[in-house]
Amino acid sequence: MIRSSAVSLALGYVALGIAALVLFAAPLWYAWQVTIQEGRAEILQADARAIAIEKMELVSSRLRDAVARYDLELLASLLRESVPEFSPADAPADAPSTTVVAFPARHSRKI
Image (cartoon, rainbow, N blue to C red):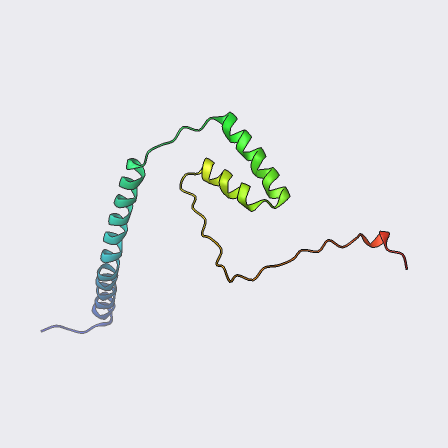
């Protein structure tokens, strides 16, 4: 006959908690392992690209100029040239347009 004492009850709760933890954690651990292995395989299969520093310096200076001039077409073409995976979505035809108005400096106003 099983005697129910405080120690056996506590040990039962500990065993039940460990069993619940194992049942919950095992599928999570397995899924994590599978995901990590797939990610490693994708990274190892990817082709490494060699990039010339001079080319990147040229492209980065042209990118800075395009950003300073708000030239979206040049910016998109430079990004396509330097990053072949870059493919921006075209703006919808019915997209609202905005107008930027340059205001004169406050100190130049005459009151």
